[in-house]
Image (tube, rainbow, N blue to C red; front, top):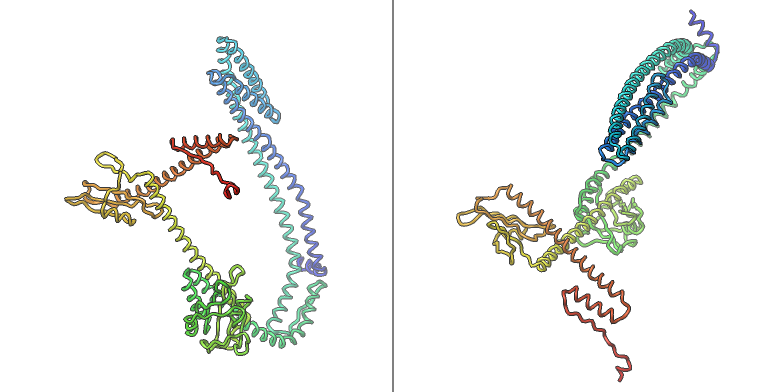
Length: 636
């Protein structure tokens, strides 16, 4: 009953006032409980700051002081044992420990802790004075006094360490106690906050529910009426009560019922027309999606082919098969960019054109020539009416033609020509779709060209490098007069001339492995080519009468040695070549520096001859200036 009375009162008020009133009521409740919660949490924050900024910092300072005292004792021991000349490091550690203790004393709030820290500071000051006295006693040679001071320092240092340890332990207990207290206060604050929030929440929910009922009940009535309209019952009306917005809205809905009834018939007609338009658009979208998928499939298929001729034939076959074109041709521009040359075609007529080397002059003949010149796609929907169409007797069934430029980096490399047996077979959408295909085809063709060029250049480079390696090793062998080394019967001797290894040498020279099993009259032989960049520069030959045959492990070992041997001797050769070049440059530099130091011609010539003779192991050197006759002497 109370709810109904409250609802009738609220229905006399606009919805906006109800919502604003409920919002203000919630703000009042929140404003009354917020100070209590904020004060509680502010106290908790202060305790946490005290715990974080004071207790934890004191603990860190005490631990740091303990470490510095220990370090001071170690440094003092090093001084006593004469590892260091002075106790300055120990004194410096004591000074730092005093600074840390003074800082901890300044921020400590516990009186017992402060008193203990004061005692430790006094002990440290005494410890510092004893170190200074020890230094004076050792400097003056008073060993008895030094021994007494050392004993006192040790006892005092141990005492300070024990006090520091006690203070650290007490501080740890203090921190734990503070932590427990902070946690207890936090729990109490959280419990209080939860109670206040719960009570406030209940009050807010109660008032919100009452306000919501005053809004949802008329909404339910409106829903019932609109559902009746939706089911086609245009005779039903919505009950109006009160003076709020819902009542006004119900009156508007009732007045619109008649208009809706009149609009239903016209709306059905328009929906049918719109449905037909959407169906047509869907068919067009499906066609374009299928065309784009076909373009993707063709581009994916041609992207893997690197042989240019096979690639061109693959393009024409795939495009004709997937799109159903009567003829597909690929024209590429010649090197002078004067003609578009047909390089591939799928139709029988196109193959005839290929056999006779069909080409079109750029900018002059046919649609293909125009596109190759302008770089713009062109369509002939009716080839009989297009002035640019080239009537080709090899393709008599053509009714529509479309030519698309193939460009790479804004450069035209060719034209993709497609022809159909149907008139008006191409649309603007076909241009945009096949334009994408033409770009992909152009990239694939250019990639195939680059692959061919790169592969040819790589083969030429590898051949030239192998020739260079072979020539360098032939020259190096001649200069070094070294044929190899032979190890047999425990002796390793150089070879003056290459040994005749027969078939083994011939097989190894061809880059293959030669092996033979041992027989009654011969030993087992193994010949491995020594290769450098796939160029055979020597042979590693192994023979043994103790092995009947060579195992795979034996062959792997010898092959590995041969590989490392090739790299090692090549590195040695390069090092020797570099060293010889450096020596030559040094000799030339020395001679040049000595020559440039003279200003007289006779001294320059004498120095050059002497230095060059010395550099060439005492060779005879002659420097003769050419004396040219004058024109008058020649006439005489």
